[in-house]
Length: 328
Image (cartoon, rainbow, N blue to C red):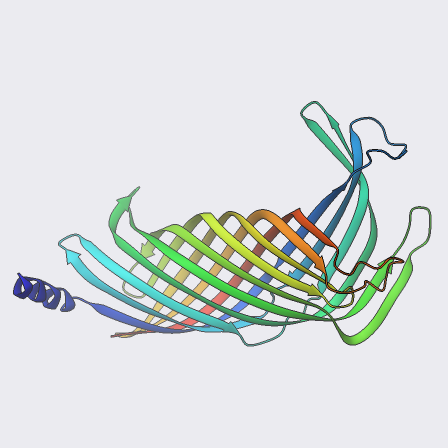
């Protein structure tokens, strides 16, 4: 039996192909951190209509417009007369720093409920920007099988798990603040001082289908569509100026699409160009903790906690990639 398995593996290896592909990517987009808090009005004369309450919203948008470099390894072999199996490993990191700023926006307002309908009126009272420094490490492992047919096109189906780790530091605060009826007050403080740190880990299992749209001896064209129904995001940030830490676990879904054109330059060398877009939306609860006194308020918040605050972590990013593929 062991001899038979060894012979089968040896036979499949005769049809195996290994691909090594260095990649350079121009990435666009951001990841958005959105928090909402409802403030109770029970026992106070708020002057609000019935079935309504105060709400606060805060958004932090972190830039991801950087150059990435990485390496993709692939092994594909014949698994039967009409079946091939493939495995892919990839890793990447950023080469540059974001050109865009981290954007911090804050609102307060009134949320009213009427039956199944909820309406919200918000007033934006603060907007600031900070310079961001990013370290991004990511990787993906996947398996796929092919030689299926869909509407006359060759199709491969697969499963992959993607991991991304973002760590950011924000410096300086520039923008404006205002109250209803007042003019805006310009803010340009702290210059290059550290004001916020942010760490985000995303784990995204995805199911995908790859469709061969065109292929001849010199050029091939394919499109890939993916769905990620069990995506996870873990966040930890430190508002250095306000002496406040926050942690979030969020769960949600993602959708992706990409298209690739491959030019066969020589027998064992291809040039690939890829455009991709990915959207991730997760929802969870955030726990906040003041490890010191917030100097921007009139009370001492040291030790104060806010747990189970509704939080969303949303990402939208695209990229244009160029790769040199070597086949063995």
